[in-house]
Length: 249
Image 1: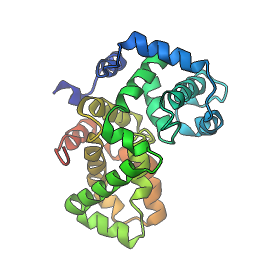
Image 2: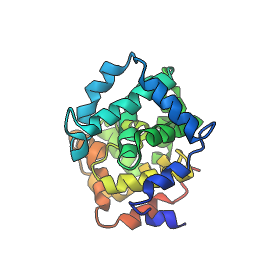
Image 3: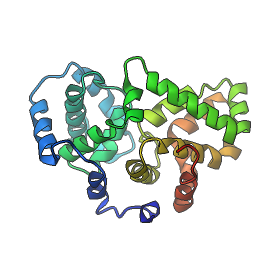
């Protein structure tokens, strides 16, 4: 499919929005968004604490009083009121931030609500973390099957896979420093569904196998949390083909 070759930057936002089907149409969710902004959220202070550290390398989000952080705050605040059972959870800031680089505030809110309607994604944010724990277990089993040697190395280094799988899955890899790869991940997850995140994680581990297997625990943490996607800095299309392997679905 053409999307595996990457969406044009100029139309990426429009295509992302086209993947969503809000109840009552876009105009309805847009009105809901603006109504929610007029209310106070109990999560406002918590959201504000995360704004400046969400995207430290992206200029648009660096200014504490800037447009980027204000828009990020608005969408996160609105969603915390829209879905009070979720409220605000770390990880959503990365999802919303990436969306805002291509969409208006209202459109980003629309795409976020659509993503959260996918049961396997939404349950990750339940208060008991039941959905997240299930996905962590599932990914661990996939690691044993597809990257057994790496799984053993992580065990020897006392590297808890939960430490990196949690931000990967909650933030849809939005915390990775290679923003071009992140855009491609969002392209495919919005098309294929959030179970595609399993494919992404396994592709990243496979590509970085040689380096990961010789690193100590602190070095592993640094690479996995921010820079594991840099292995595809040049071979981006090859990465997309790796992700398209049908590991899980």
